[in-house]
Length: 321
Image 1 (cartoon, rainbow, N blue to C red):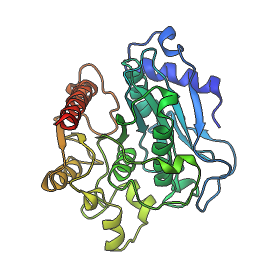
Image 2 (image 1 turned 180 degrees about the horizontal axis):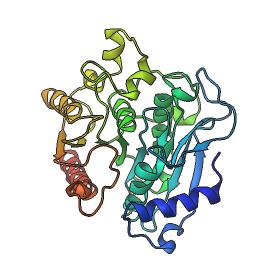
Image 3 (image 1 turned 60 degrees about the horizontal axis):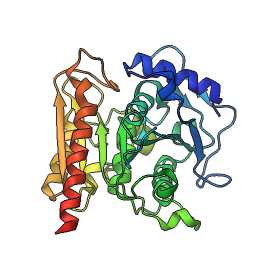
Image 4 (image 1 turned 45 degrees about the horizontal axis):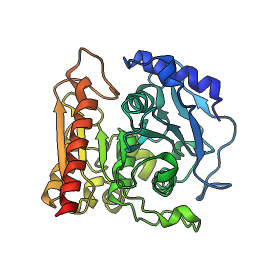
C-alpha cells in the first residue's frame, strides 16, 4: 500500500497544482481514512505481487497501479451537507489517476461539505480478471450506504463520479447496480449498490467501432472481442427509465473520448425517459480534472453542484406528492 505520509504529501501537491484553494487546517481537520472493501482476499481470479506503484514523470504522474488491496479513501468534511460521492479516477484500467483527477475533486467536494470516497480499485492490467474493478465499485457503494449513519450522510444522497475509464466504471455501476459480479453474504450485501446520481467526465461509453481504440476496450474485452462483448460492456446498452439522474461533461477537442461517447449515452437515457444532462466544452482535450482558471471547463464542479441541488429538490417534491 501507499504509505500515509507519502499519500498526504501527494494530496497537498494535488490541491496546489489543481488550483484548489485549501489551507492545511482544512485538509487535515479530519484524517484521511482507508477502508478495505473486502474481508481477506478479494473475490475473483488474479493476484498482484509486490508493492503498489506511483507513476513518476509523464502522463502517468501521480497515478497508482499494482493494487492488491482495493479500498476507499475517505475525506470527511468539517461540516457535512449529508451528501456523499464515490469518486473513480481514470487511467484506462491499467492505472488510476489520483493526482490529476480523483484527489483534486475529492478535496474540492470535501471543502463544500460532501463526504468523499476515493476508490482504489483493482486493475485488469495488474493481473486481475476484467470484472474486478466493477465488483469493487459495486461493493464500495454497498458499504457506503450500509454505513451512512456512521459517516453522517443521507442514504438517499449517495452518488458516483468518474473520469474517463473511471467514468465507464461509474456509469456501469449506476446502470447495472444489481449485476451479480461476486458472491457475498455479510451485512453490507443487504444494501443497494444503486447510486442516487452519477457524474461522468469525458467517460468511455462505447466499446464498439469507431470507438475501438481506447485502452479501456483493450483491458476489459481484449484486442479482438465479439460484438456481443462490445455491447455487453458499452454503457448505452443499459440505458433505462429507472437510471439514476446523470450529468455528463465532455470537451469538443478530446482525442481519446470525443463527445460522441457522452452524446450516445445522453441520447439513450433521454430516449428511455431517464433524467440526463450533457455539457460539451469547446476546449480542454482529455484528462482535465478540475481544469485551470483560464479554461471555461473549470466551471464544471460548480455546474455539477448546482445540478445536484436541483435533482435533490426535485426528489423531495416528488416524495411529498
